[in-house]
Image 1 (cartoon, rainbow, N blue to C red):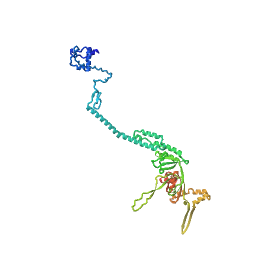
Image 2 (cartoon, helix red, strand yellow):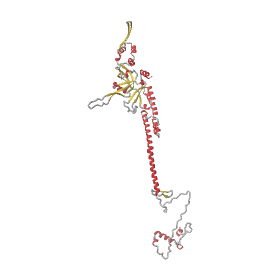
Image 3 (cartoon, rainbow, N blue to C red):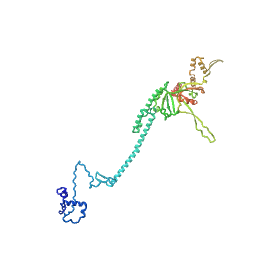
Image 4 (cartoon, rainbow, N blue to C red):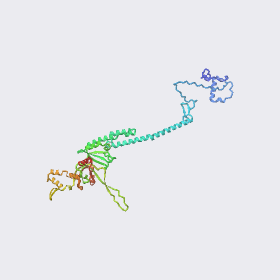
Length: 468
């Protein structure tokens, strides 16, 4: 330290050579040197500048030239970390990397303003281009694809809801189908999911079980269906109106065949119940009674004629017109599969007064010979039945003669194409209980028909003879 204060640096290797004149050497007085240093710091030395030194004091030497500092050469070490010196007063402060002060620290130089503007424009253009491409992709590709996929899923989900309803609303097959539909990634994959097949399999198993449990003591079941495809007849859905609900009574074997042949579109809209029927007598004309050609055991369909008001015809202002009425009937029967339990023909058809005369005349040489054979039958079937019931006649013989008299009479009339068209029939029909009021209130408008699928024997023979 004393050597530095004295300025004795001759032994230092980094000391630069002294370029001052020989007579300008520093005073060796340490006290004076310290005094000069304090004066420089306090500023008093400047006030006495130019004044003569007091007598007897040391001679003041001029201020020496500052010696330049020589920086040591850096040693390049491959793994030596670079030390950052904080607060170096000789290092200029770094500019912030703003829009006007962008710099590449990797090259250690500042980017020119023109290049900065070009770079900013390129970045903005790239962002706009990316946004434009993303928007076009969303509206032209992604959004239509998602709409098509969602539309396909909605179609299949609607099929699942249409088939799996009522008692099959919680069927495991429904859960599996919903998972397959929701897992689809393309519209083709979703539309390829088979809904009708699993639904048909589940409905057949359910309806077969219903046939076994709902049959009556006579081996029959009642199938309830709806003519409106938008409505269901299941017990859990009570949206069926009486006009669209139809009933048909079938044998167990026929019902099982029907279930095995139908698919879910039919099986999902029908219900199998235990027949709850009653026998209803109706008095109808021969035209209404299928021409009087029905017999006991036949299955008939019941239609009802309805009177509808027609629109009044155009007329002049001076004339008044009344609306006309037309008779129409529905396309579907009100009752299907009603059974004919009994049929009675009016007693007027039981009065018999017939005479059959066969005569033959032979003429030869003005000689003629006549022979005749006459058969006469006069009876009253009603009175004969009364006599047989009272025991006046042999019951076995009378029963053999009059067995199915009315049916035989109708059959003879059919074969001869001649009959009493004004006769009246009393028919006893077995119908579901809910249809009784319809038969009672509309007895004058009923029409009984014979379906060819359950045709009687005479109709079957005629059809075979006609169509081979």
